[in-house]
Amino acid sequence: MLEDSKKCSCCEESDEQKYAKIEQIIEEYKDKEGCLIQILHFAQGIFGYLPLELQEFIAQRLNIPLSEVSGVVSFYSFFSTQPRGENTIRVCLGTACYVRGGKKIAEKLGEILDINVGDTTKDGKFTLEVMRCIGACGLAPAITINDKVFKQVNPDKLHSILEKYY
Image (cartoon, rainbow, N blue to C red; front, side):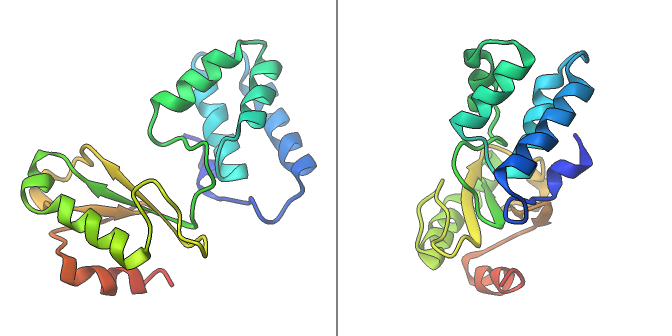
């Protein structure tokens, strides 16, 4: 993954500047195997999400069908077609996490943040998602906020975890 894709610059630049950056990365990667995923990561890092207009731009510049781009975007859960919050919370609902209360964690987070899974808070601070497994079964139930894993989470810990992100 490109390092720049982790840094959202979506509020600091004009759309024209953003598209120019994406055009540069397309030129750099277009002849490399598997370039579409790399380009989409980069584009999402710049815009914060992948709206249809951006997908059309990428498809046109790569000379591939829009259906190929949108197929990749819809297949991989780390791509979003909707604006995301500053922080992405992912609740693991893999088997170990689910049986140890993962669903209750997701419900409590939704209650605390006043959003449903898949939504973003009104202040744009958090997006709440669920995942089938984050690969931390021995730490169940687990959540991630951005790239940080929180282990053995219970509903009582959620307020103190979220405080770190305000």
